[in-house]
Amino acid sequence: MEYAPSAAQRPAGTSGDAGRDVLLHARGIVKRYGRRRVLDGVDLAVRSGEVAAVVGSNGAGKSTLLKICAGLVRPDKGRVTVAGRLGYCPQDAGVMDFLTPREHFTLFGAGAAMSRPDADRRGRELAARLDWPVARTTLAKDLSGGTRQKLNVVLSALADPEVLLLDEPYQGFDRGSYVDFWQNVWRWREEGRAVVVVTHLLHQLDQVDHVLDLTPATRGARR
Ligand SMILES: Nc1ncnc2c1ncn2[C@@H]1O[C@H](COP(=O)(O)OP(=O)(O)OP(=O)(O)O)[C@@H](O)[C@H]1O
Image (cartoon, rainbow, N blue to C red; front, side, top):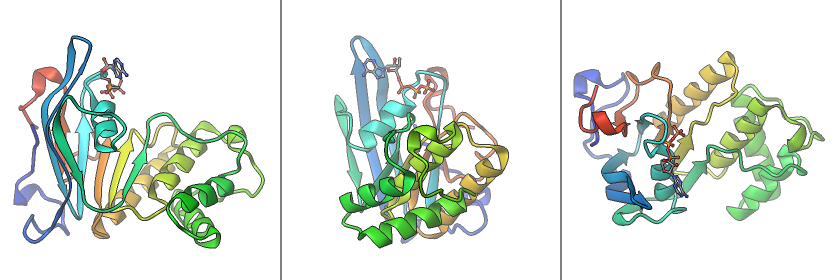
């Protein structure tokens, strides 16, 4: 199920698996909805300093797999282990309309035992890396779609998680923000995080460490 490129295909700066811990390990994941088997024995292992892309047709089970990895959906079979803190960016922005972005930072930061100033500083720092100067008073409901999604990405990374699960995180991003987003992904990789990105866009697939294709007809047939 899982595809790991050869050493020759690895992007510059990655050095192979030796000595790096597996931070996310999903083994033999099976999930049915009614009679439909959405995931049928899916395996995914992502080490510190690796990026995995999860691809596949609509309805192939990408979001379901991420929710299972995030502990939000229980698999019928299989097991997920996560080493360290986990950050999850859902496909549908989970932001609160009547809070400002900076109130989101402090609220989500409090959930991760961050002080108010630390959470605020970290949130604005991550936002700046997505070319988003955070206004003090704008409510989340009044943000543009792309900016709401940036807020979602920032919240998932706020507490410096070792494992980041990002479900189509750049919907609505303009081209510059899309490029910035991938720069962040490479930076997270350099920092030793394990990053999983659900994507429909194929441009970056030659730069990631693993590609997991859940399209039923192609399962097992990797690029
Ligand atoms: N809670 C649920 N109850 C019943 N069926 C569900 C549920 N969640 C997802 N499904 C079904 O499981 C299948 C996989 O859904 P999922 O959202 O994981 O696909 P996806 O690969 O992320 O799709 P997309 O590319 O469209 O986002 C779909 O047929 C979907 O309708």
